[in-house]
Image (cartoon, rainbow, N blue to C red):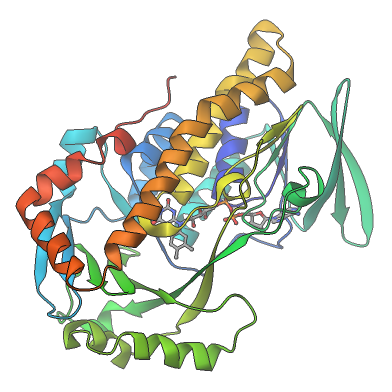
Length: 391
Ligand SMILES: Cc1cc2nc3c(=O)[nH]c(=O)nc-3n(C[C@H](O)[C@H](O)[C@H](O)COP(=O)(O)OP(=O)(O)OC[C@H]3O[C@@H](n4cnc5c(N)ncnc54)[C@H](O)[C@@H]3O)c2cc1C
């Protein structure tokens, strides 16, 4: 089995396929796995897959379980409502809601892959093209100065929002810029001391902008993400930085003081995948951001990629169990995933509108959140977080 891309989706897919009984060749264009980056929320549905793959305990060891999501008014600096997580989420969903440094999660997955004798990790290996034929697929992979061919039963393309295979094999357009930019920084807790809440996730809401903060790396850093309107790739970083700070004019000093600490702020223009009429074509399928990159407003992009991996492996299992052909399995995978992924992406679009509401609508939003209360706000996500892979 061939997997293109060693991000969270590709690595989880490699693990899931190997545990199903396949030998896996994974191709990652980078020299090594990410060691820098920012935070990631890992919801119980994603953790259910990691549990099944026997890596959840390793993820938990490098993650934190925030006690709650405190929704804040970014202007007044006051809490609107607190959505309980911590023990409450574990009791409700059977698993905790975690926050983790993205590189830590990727390292856990990469080392589990490296430990698995059925997975071969090919680094500095760029997937260029694929051809399907009667016996499976042949992938063309650039390795150093040369180009090599690899054969397999099927190919999972998990090469991210800018997926090359999506463009060359599925004839799809480039990713679509959302008009938004995420600014991200990690601030050491030594600098912050006790001047910021390091126990909870804080979601700061304001017109046309929001921010989220939570601890990572065992509370040694505070992960800060600010999402504002912004230009696509190629825009001037300094100018965009000034525009971002201007967009936060009027925010409470309890948030703005975070800019006083020394930290590297990284600009991350937000793209989504173009609409695709199909994710599978014979024995070739797109997964994760390559298939359905969504806005991060529901914190579900990586979670959906992790779920994809479990379902892909489950569908392809039938190739071993019953001799079904791989093309049929890939079609089943797409059918199984479309509705749920579309619903998660729709939630992200709704949250975008809600989070960035201007007054007086923002006031109405705040009052309804307060009236609903944290427990009921969490219960609205049950369809998302209660999901577990069948096997
Ligand atoms: C600001 C922000 C916050 C987010 N927060 C969350 C969150 O809290 N929770 C959550 O679940 N999701 C979140 N997401 C979404 C999440 O980051 C992505 O959905 C997820 O990382 C996608 O993983 P992936 O493996 O599909 O793609 P990627 O992470 O893009 O990985 C693709 C990999 O493929 C490699 N590659 C690319 N092209 C090739 C090629 N041709 N050949 C070989 N290798 C190739 C790349 O080098 C890369 O390693 C967030 C996103 C953003 C921008």
